[in-house]
Length: 290
Image 1 (tube, rainbow, N blue to C red):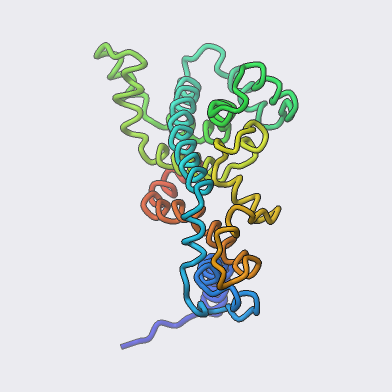
Image 2 (image 1 turned 120 degrees about the vertical axis):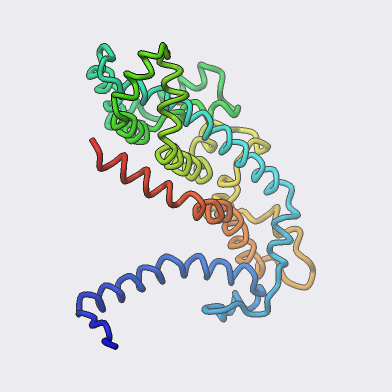
């Protein structure tokens, strides 16, 4: 039996990949072990490779906080509704621009792509949202981000690669453009639709700036605003007041901070493995073809 010979390139490549894996995975791992370690061990700097004095007190504090649970529900709502709006609007924009017989296609495409490079600015955008009466409402989160131009171009490229023979056959059978889109194009576009789903879902789940600008009531805040206040501003008031007398609130603050962040990213970590194959396939097909 002959052993496979490894070249210097293979060895270096494996070492680099292992380094990338460690750099990518360790922050998540560290965040997890800190969140379940005791506050004193974290404060002393003992936690590095494994948890010390395992406890779930930080998660108990986080999950008992009504503001975090409410923000979690808001984020789920914004993400679900936002993805639905994004997929509908992106599809309605991408499909006509993928058809060669669309009148003024080049001009329309120019104006769409133009918005990728030139933006009206934050203040004009806020004035438009305010004039439409959407400030401090869910629509301020959903409508201004209804279409991402890059995602639309990716979907348009995918639609354009669907054979014209299918469109012609459906047209001969008397199908309208709506029927062609719903019964011919979309069933063949599941890879790119899955790609758009994960793109938009991650964007909505991680988004905090629109809520920071357009929302005034704390009852409407998404989870990322709470995470931002805790991580950046150190606002632990609502969380640390529920700490027991056994440990000082300042000692447990770091654990609670990591627990909140870990809970915030958990849904994405759970969903991504199931849509990864569609993500890679759709991104490659939409980017390489056309």
